[in-house]
Image 1 (tube, rainbow, N blue to C red):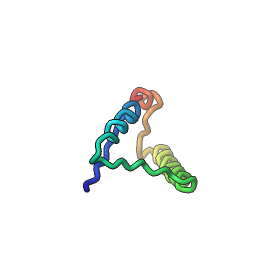
Image 2: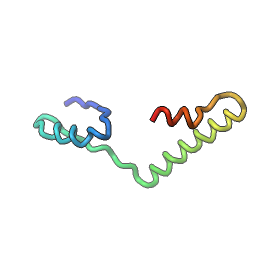
Image 3: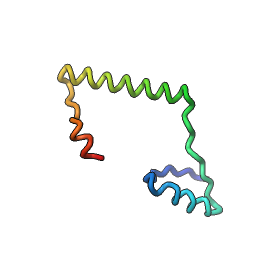
Image 4: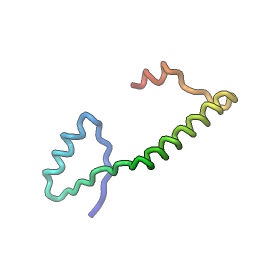
Length: 74
Protein backbone atom coordinates (compact mmCIF):
# COMPACT_ATOMS: atom_id res chain seq x y z
CA UNK A 1 0.00 0.00 0.00
CA UNK A 2 1.23 3.53 -0.79
CA UNK A 3 0.63 6.66 1.29
CA UNK A 4 -0.30 10.03 -0.18
CA UNK A 5 -0.40 13.34 1.65
CA UNK A 6 -2.79 15.95 0.26
CA UNK A 7 -3.50 19.55 1.10
CA UNK A 8 -7.18 20.35 0.71
CA UNK A 9 -8.74 23.80 1.24
CA UNK A 10 -10.81 23.92 4.43
CA UNK A 11 -13.98 24.71 2.52
CA UNK A 12 -13.65 21.54 0.40
CA UNK A 13 -12.33 19.18 3.10
CA UNK A 14 -15.60 17.56 4.23
CA UNK A 15 -16.76 16.97 0.65
CA UNK A 16 -13.41 15.44 -0.29
CA UNK A 17 -13.37 13.13 2.75
CA UNK A 18 -16.91 11.93 2.02
CA UNK A 19 -15.92 11.29 -1.57
CA UNK A 20 -12.80 9.24 -0.90
CA UNK A 21 -14.34 7.28 1.97
CA UNK A 22 -16.74 5.84 -0.61
CA UNK A 23 -13.83 4.27 -2.48
CA UNK A 24 -13.35 0.73 -1.18
CA UNK A 25 -9.61 0.72 -1.90
CA UNK A 26 -8.85 3.89 0.10
CA UNK A 27 -8.07 3.99 3.82
CA UNK A 28 -8.36 7.43 5.41
CA UNK A 29 -6.10 8.21 8.35
CA UNK A 30 -7.43 11.12 10.34
CA UNK A 31 -4.79 13.69 11.30
CA UNK A 32 -3.33 13.28 14.76
CA UNK A 33 -4.45 15.81 17.32
CA UNK A 34 -1.79 17.47 19.40
CA UNK A 35 -1.79 16.70 23.09
CA UNK A 36 -1.89 19.68 25.42
CA UNK A 37 1.81 19.36 26.19
CA UNK A 38 2.73 18.99 22.49
CA UNK A 39 0.61 22.02 21.61
CA UNK A 40 2.25 24.01 24.39
CA UNK A 41 5.72 22.97 23.19
CA UNK A 42 4.87 23.94 19.61
CA UNK A 43 3.57 27.33 20.78
CA UNK A 44 6.73 27.98 22.80
CA UNK A 45 8.98 27.07 19.87
CA UNK A 46 7.06 29.36 17.51
CA UNK A 47 7.05 32.14 20.11
CA UNK A 48 10.84 31.85 20.53
CA UNK A 49 11.24 32.11 16.74
CA UNK A 50 9.06 35.23 16.70
CA UNK A 51 11.08 36.85 19.50
CA UNK A 52 14.29 36.06 17.62
CA UNK A 53 12.89 37.68 14.46
CA UNK A 54 11.94 40.81 16.40
CA UNK A 55 15.44 40.98 17.90
CA UNK A 56 17.02 40.61 14.46
CA UNK A 57 14.74 43.34 13.10
CA UNK A 58 15.72 45.68 15.93
CA UNK A 59 19.37 45.04 15.09
CA UNK A 60 18.64 45.88 11.45
CA UNK A 61 19.60 42.41 10.23
CA UNK A 62 16.17 41.63 8.75
CA UNK A 63 13.16 43.66 7.69
CA UNK A 64 9.75 42.59 8.95
CA UNK A 65 6.56 42.84 6.91
CA UNK A 66 4.11 45.58 7.78
CA UNK A 67 0.63 44.74 9.04
CA UNK A 68 -0.70 46.08 5.74
CA UNK A 69 1.47 43.60 3.79
CA UNK A 70 0.29 40.72 5.96
CA UNK A 71 -3.39 41.66 5.61
CA UNK A 72 -3.11 42.02 1.83
CA UNK A 73 -2.22 38.31 1.60
CA UNK A 74 -5.45 37.31 3.32
